[in-house]
Image 1 (cartoon, rainbow, N blue to C red):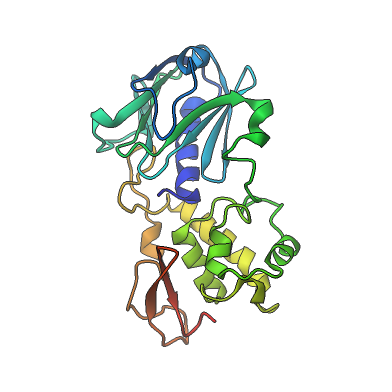
Image 2 (image 1 turned 90 degrees about the horizontal axis):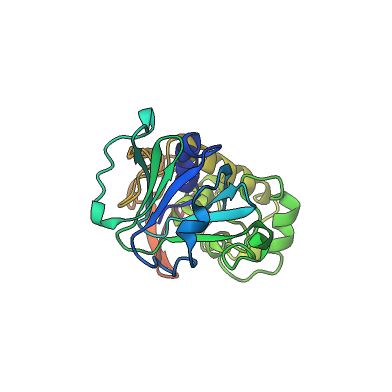
Length: 283
């Protein structure tokens, strides 16, 4: 599933051809993806100008000139692709199959945004901006990992008394929004914390390492265009390259690359998901 860096990469990729432009046509080829589309969403989008494009956790939010918000969620295999009559340098061959093109948004920029989703676990929603804080996908989200609301004081308070594993804590979107399996593995490796360690039992000497590790990993991944695993590609069809910088993820039995560590990367399963870590330097 695309994680925060992939979603942010897509947001940045489509921003030049969306922000400030009018939706001149909206085509929905089916009544739903993971959930049904709002009634009359095509006519409600027609003629609306996209004022700004934001990201909240793993969701892309387009603010419209009438106060509505268009939410786009990629799900497991969704892609937002750029085509149209004048996409310019913003698009390449996407390799996507046209039968999975479920939504088209034509814009006054000359570009067309296409929501392509073979498995149909993605989502497109439209709601009043005043309802955003209560939206079922947004209302329980924790602070953004790259925002100022995530502080060491907040983290220390949130960790207090937690019996769950540290990996499960970081994956819980109520604690920190947007972190997924790949990047949590990388964060814990950089911070030197075992994914199995009880969240409420993090030593005070290691607590200051967590937020810098989160921000460094995510910033580097965004700069690399995300990690191209299985279905994910950027909005222009290009691949991301952060997977070539993985310290632990998908590197089972490889030697740990940290200086002065002679350990090997191990793979275990936690809550049905693969966890990669070095038992020698992650405690």
